[in-house]
Image 1 (cartoon, rainbow, N blue to C red):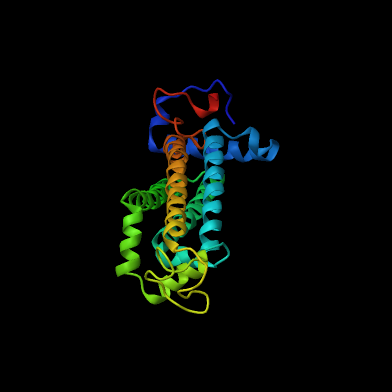
Image 2 (cartoon, one colour):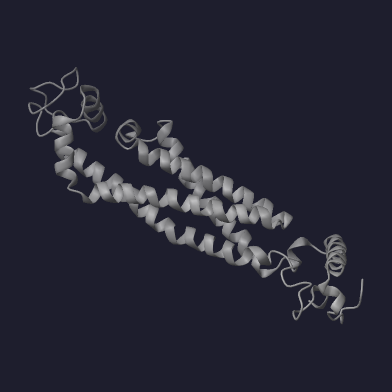
Length: 255
């Protein structure tokens, strides 16, 4: 290896000079990785990329766990959520799955210092962002668009017998305003039963569910933007070669 006081010459700007410098760079880093722990050789940009990928993996895994739990029926009222909000559940599942895949690709690109993989990682982050924001938009629009009146209209005109029975059994209510008002009767619901109507319980449950969905979706948005900006700014600085071999800039041998 040449001394550390190496300065750029005219030969460094030729194709042969750049190829020679690249081979020297690879040999120098191979020696460094054998002699020093990897964390001492990481650039600041590489650490930022790493922690942003960990952050992405963390909240994507959490979203995946909750959405998969609803798909598998592991949570209370899962059947109601899947029946009436399957688009939210499946978009969340798709976004979180894509987020986990993106984070894994990012880790491979970071550890291998592969800019092509990091470029793919950067593109995938935009898809993840759009899926997460879609969940918030769908939930917010439904929650703020006359929810109680919409639920009443859907109960009267759109719901099938099976859907009404599903709500009644899940929320332990009978009928809509009362057991005698558009109720679906079975062994748990009949006109003289001492159960409240589903209007209040169902409206409150829907409002809370939709509020939770759009709140967490919009809370995740700034974290996702941070990951995207960090990746965009730091991908080219994952190692010390971004400025190496370019006229007028410091050589990697001087760093």
